[in-house]
Image (tube, rainbow, N blue to C red; front, side, top):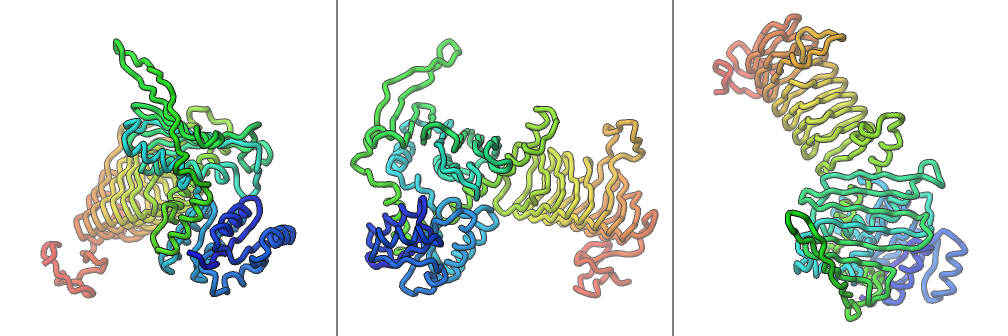
Length: 527
């Protein structure tokens, strides 16, 4: 690409480096920045390039094909959204946005507009990382076991985002690509020194389903700069140190652990520098070229919006873990540690920030869990369920797919809901027949089973030990004290059967034919 079709939005601390590279590549048309001093400096350095403060004018320019956004992180979403809506390809510096929800919106918008959404995870284009991945894929250190990164310096201290969001995206991006999978566990701890709500130092612990472990240590309060990545395999170790000269940025340590008399014994070997001089290129230049290639070919880049979303997912879980630890009060260390570990769920699971999800919980794809819910340990919730506000589920409860549990419902231990069960607002399950507050009777829990497609109306009560048949319908306020047959309609206190219900939720007529969908039943079986 030789036409001048690129605009850089933000020419400050990092943006000026993007300006330089796109100018050297011969494609820079416009620089946009809100600060007068910055605009003046850019105009003096690049007199042939347009300089403006008007972002809307940039988007209205038909000659500009793509924008490169290097503004503060808090502005990334809004600027990228406007750019995509204006049918411009977008390069967004990390992080893609400050919430996964906003990131998902950008990815959808880019797909709808058929535009490239590129995320500035620069390490993916670093020659040392490119070579590192090649060597790992060749089996040089055999099976990956452990990854550890340190990204430390004195500044640049930010107020739009904390150190986790500012420094860690690079390392998360690389670790996810090396592991080749998403983590099953994320836990972060941090310290705030300069501002009560902004972490200056964080340590993040990741565990992956394959057994790989990883740690990320980031700080902007360190006396010296350190950018080091350590990769430990079963047959050797790599160290990538970006503060070293090109000749020693990537080093192989062929150390191994051998077993002697039932004990592990380390066997050290001489380190071997990996020569990346033949492929050396400024990483930012390589990244800029990758963006130009993507918009020219229409091929999704290595650091696509989808890759950015995977990084955002880990960042959000890490942030939740940090915030949980700020609220542990005077609880013991062991109980606090149990609460703040954050399990990972499928991408399209929605969990409101006020909800509490304990360890050892399974949540299926597409499920939504709303305000002030608590899902206790050992519980399993299926796919595409909707759990309303102020619900408690568990411990050890199983809920099927496509269930809808409305506000203020507690599904206690002993209750099992099959697929498609509807629980109306404030309905009640009991699990002990004759409870006493002063006497523990959890050994007397009676199982309650609600079968597929049953509806439990608002404010009804299901006494423990009962089975509610498939597609049965329990009227609002009813008290169920015995088993309810399949397709039965029951009302009252105690609940009594007054008719039969169709699978579609309508009351059957005398001939057991649904007046709405026309389905006929014989002994409550469809015919």
